[in-house]
Length: 131
Image 1 (cartoon, rainbow, N blue to C red):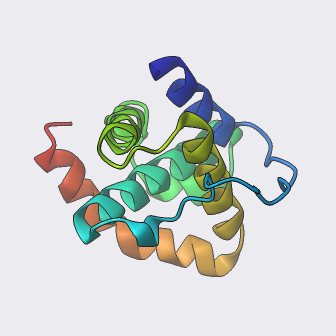
Image 2: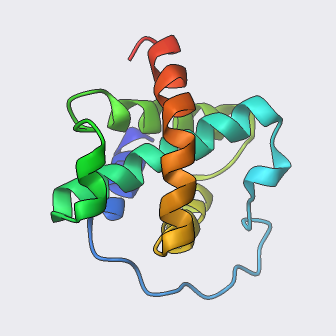
């Protein structure tokens, strides 16, 4: 289970994926299907992973944030996604697809602004989780 989550986190640090074909199964998951607390945790986890990807690739957008590796951003991502797999019944493949959609949605100025606006609350959520 954790290996696939690590792969998803690492995929965020690689080149953006080719758009995937729409899923024909019930695997098309959405954060809108979750209670607000779980959706907020998942959005923050993905924001940490996206910032980490920016930092690893040398993208200037990542310089405004602390090193996500050093401050527990990856660990927050892994824990949050594992928890969603357990509580919401999502599969690894569904998590990976959702993460890729979030990456694509933030690869623009509006997405960057969204992450910037979220980051203070996400940092507090990560601290509250003990990371």
